[in-house]
Structures are given as C-alpha cells and as structure tokens.
Image (cartoon, rainbow, N blue to C red; front, side, top):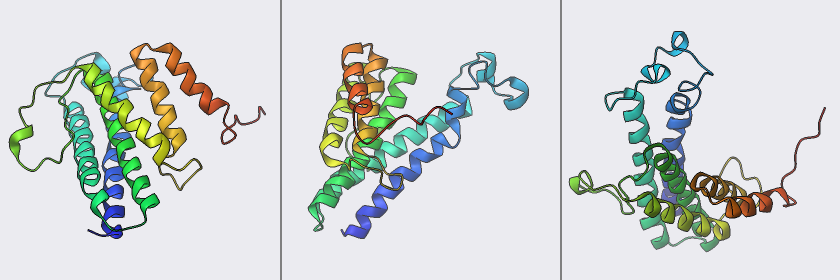
Length: 201
C-alpha cells in the first residue's frame, strides 16, 4: 500500500533468487562438469545421476517459483501505490527483470515449464501444464523489453540496470540460437559508454 511496502516487495524478490546463486547454482554448473568432483560434494549430479528426488533440483525449482511469485505480487500491486512514478516504474522493472531471470534459469534447465504471471493465492497453480519453451521465452523478452525503458542506466547499489537487462537478453537469444539478436544486444553493451574492459596488466 505504500512506497515502503513496494521497496520491501522488491527486496524480497532479490532475496529469494539470491538463495539460488548462493546455493544450488553450483550444482548445475561446476558440480555437473569436471570443475568439481564427488569427493568435494558427494552429489549424485557429479556422477551424472539425475532424479526428481534430488534435493538440489527441488531447491532450485522452489527458489525459482518463489522468486516468480514474489515478482508477480509486486507487479500486480506496486502500480496501484501512490508514490513517485519514476521510482514505481523502476521497482516494477526490477522485479520483471528478476522474473525473467528466474524463467530463463528454468527454461534452460527443463525446457517448457508452467507459466505463472499472477500471484499464487491458492492451490490452483499446482497442476498447471507445462507451457512451451517458446511461450516462456516470449515472457522473458517481454519483461526485458520493459526493463530497457524502466531501469536505471548506471550502477545502482547492486540493483538491476538497463545493461543487466540487455545482457540477459543477449544470453537468452544465444540460448535460443538466435545469434543475430544475441550479437546485436551484446554490441549495445560493448559499445556503450557505461562499460569497458579492465586494462590488461
């Protein structure tokens, strides 16, 4: 109902997805490759064993959909709050970025997944069918296109920016095999005055 509530809702969405990158993300990267071994992790994923009983899968799935739900709550309610319009748009942009990021992680791990864009208020979302991968990517790009106009274009204490949105778009296009658009978005970042490579030492 207030600007303070809006800030709390955005922070809650960041906080939820952080649980993945501080925990389960390593299982789907280093541990399932040669970068980590079973003696270090004792994870079935390190042995190429994938099962729906694997705890890291369940934690990943839960974190992504809790992130999505937090974002959906914020997207639905923040526009109704009486507060500074630019800040309101930025907050909605930030949670739409986080929703796009969560769906990107899901679609590249599982392909099509249930597509949820409204807050979950009861058990009706429990048995939703899988949407196609294409539908998931449509939502991802729709969210990120909104972000390109709503987010800040400079560094902002760790919050999502226009450049984070463009970077995620480049990754999503690359994942889809759309190399033309992946290159276009990557060049927007490369050619921007905001970012540069660190000098070679």
